[in-house]
Image 1 (cartoon, one colour):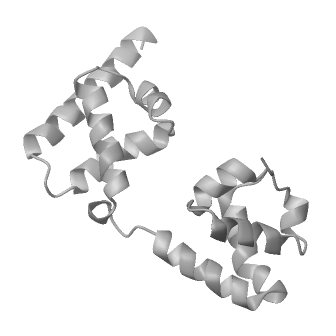
Image 2 (tube, helix red, strand yellow):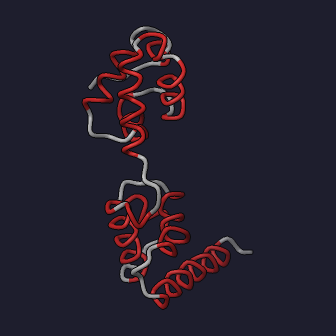
Image 3 (tube, rainbow, N blue to C red):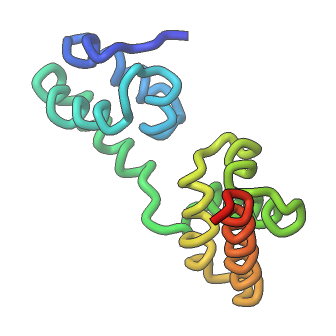
Length: 151
């Protein structure tokens, strides 16, 4: 698997990186996690600020892809909704912690925490009682963590 360096992103090799990104069906974040030794924020910055000087046509294609990959809200993101619902099941039925859910779903702790505390609340078709159960379970886990740490 090809891994790109920041030096390549600062050179004309950025064209190769951009073509690889366009050929992939990955989000910018996923692409950077798999193929770059630097963050997706840095990659986006290179695409938007440096790439136009090397290849304006390729830059326009990158901008177009970034716009189509951007989800405006959770209700229009079917994959996001699936992840949120999986996290809810793991929390309520399996009594997993946020960290354990993140590991199981190959995600980050902050993503799962936002899924359960923010995105779940924004999903229109979810019963308010289920939303309350999730928040109560998170509070229960939080209290258990405090007891374990002797606070």
